[in-house]
Length: 169
Image 1 (cartoon, rainbow, N blue to C red):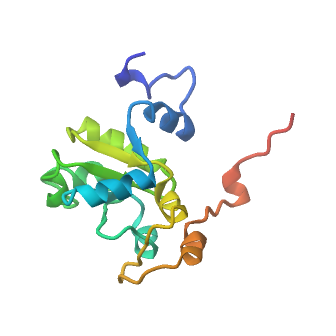
Image 2 (cartoon, rainbow, N blue to C red):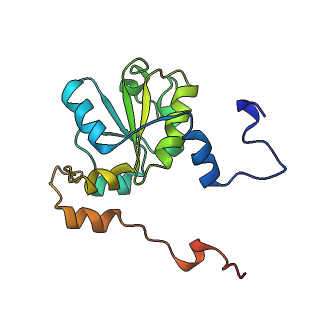
């Protein structure tokens, strides 16, 4: 199976987990401490947060750009209402993609690479890992969040229905 066929194999449908695991083999992933180092060395580093606006407004890394993953392809290309010129013009800059746990960012980093962005990485462990590494997070109105508040905001909230049917062995 070549790269173009990886999501069209109908013998066994992909799951989100299998897609992320597959793409993580080709997408560069960095840890929070790596991002701290990169932020210190590269003033032109672009932080792209692909979470939904509600998530971003509650807790974000300072100076991140928020483009929800659902509109990413339009945001990084000219000619769309969703176009973000600063991102379109960042094709040759270092971009680190951020989400809550590191899954959406892998998918988004792959998309950016396919669209011609040359230096893209995903923040492994996501913004939760950033908080676990005790790095600062801020609300949309620039209020610093303490670690416990951020932990609560970033905790997964999965309902029983979202877990799916129980499997019995």
